Image (cartoon, rainbow, N blue to C red; front, side):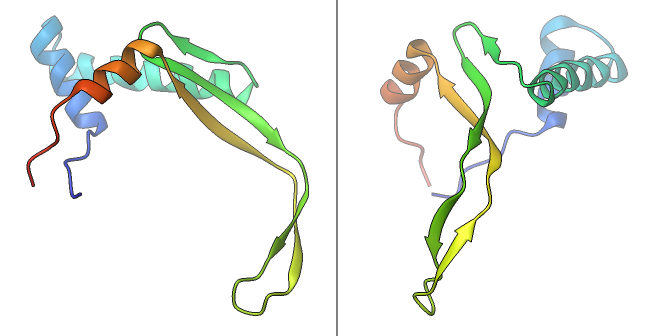
Length: 102
């Protein structure tokens, strides 16, 4: 399933076309939004974008894992992980979309 990847440049180009800002202003706007989102996540806040989904940081506890090569049990350190929970609107939209053509 080799699909296209949406990049920052694609987002700023869409802002340029849809909003009518200059290309530099559009790129700055996209960067600013992404910076605000990432800063909030670093502070441990949830980022909820209505109709899209919620980004949050979860703390995972230490656990025991297994080395697949040797079968040896090894401790996995506690860590923070980023999670995304799509809104019901986004889930429905993705579920109802036609399959991409390869």
